Length: 457
Image: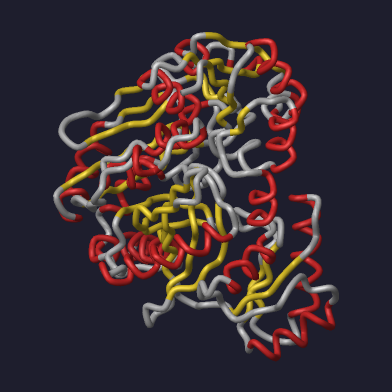
């Protein structure tokens, strides 16, 4: 096992990695910007090094600064968390050149899976089902039109280097394709420095299902089951569950076997998440892979009992999956996670500032991953996620009841949060039934609007 690990991240995920390291007897080094000087990940790490001003570009995304901190602290490895540098193949290469272990897949694999169209083709070659679409990057508006006619409207344009809904446009007719093609291309270029687009058939009411995988450095791959991530707003996940109500034991086994073969073939290592869309007939199609730990990894931990971050560390240290995982994987009960963001729950605008009261819920089956505290400060420079509230129950009904109770006990004063929105979602009959899709939030807001209008009358 490593002697000392630097965490190239901030907030709750940095604290989460510190906790895993402490349990493994590994010393930790936190890096922080000037805005995070009083953060908990700085307080609880064994060492902490300031790497720059508040803006991420000058601190957490500053590769020379991060590597310099790692060399000063004389660490064996770097854990990138999620976001920031976690899927930056160039950063992984610099770690390798600096003789520092990058806790994640090799840079070649990160680069392959990070370019969405290349990832689609790699999965197609491995017999993983993909949506009908273009073969390779679309070079022109004319080529896009030809592919759209071949695939059949509606189609969706996606940024090859993208994520989070940026560089993405749904096209329903040939007439609107030119404008949407150029709009997606421009947005992708601005967001990712790469305007390459590809095209897929658009599913009107899909469910978003993702599979958690672990792969050691000896060619062994295992799937730890799926998560349901269909509750989204503008392609950003709000609530995640495990397992999905729509995935049968047979389907889980078949997909796991396919992923084991395909990811072993490309030389995948460490933790990763393979994302799919499920159509109304229950058929699933690969859309992309995230080559890192996910925000929603706790729901998988809750139903499997496997500490994914400790598994990441042990894999990177050279251990085999057979030594890390139980001989028989079991999915026990049901887990749900709510992302608590520092946002106005109606306007969805960021809500930075000082937290005056921060009361965390507890009790049986309740977990909170956070780096915030009473009298702490939420800076305006970073992602708005301030906590993840996770519950586990013997079934989905108990998990929902437990989440409702926990949300009612989660008190945050001084800033706005999305807790009131989550409480309304959990009271919604469509959500409670489990018969939802990625368009749920649009229908949910429309129902609330209609209810308000009726109340006025």
